[in-house]
Length: 95
Image (cartoon, rainbow, N blue to C red):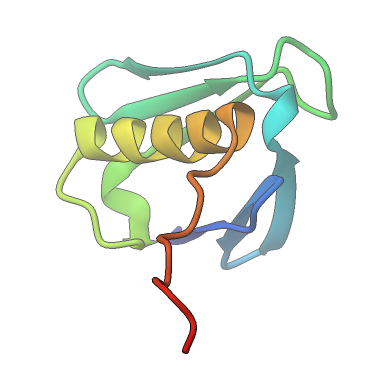
């Protein structure tokens, strides 16, 4: 089964051959690598699932090169949301 994972702002959208679901970022407790090729997203039982397990090689979008890169990407998406996104660059003086 292949997966697409999309950062939608306050949630992460997981799309598979069977359908899709959203996971709210504030429900994520930790993101870890288990075994050599599986990423575990722990929600602490705060939503419909206690944990979500994803095989890195099953992810077709975004393009990643392995488990560590998938874990890093998911952690970045979650951290950006929880810490606030950076301010947009200053456009400079308006004439």
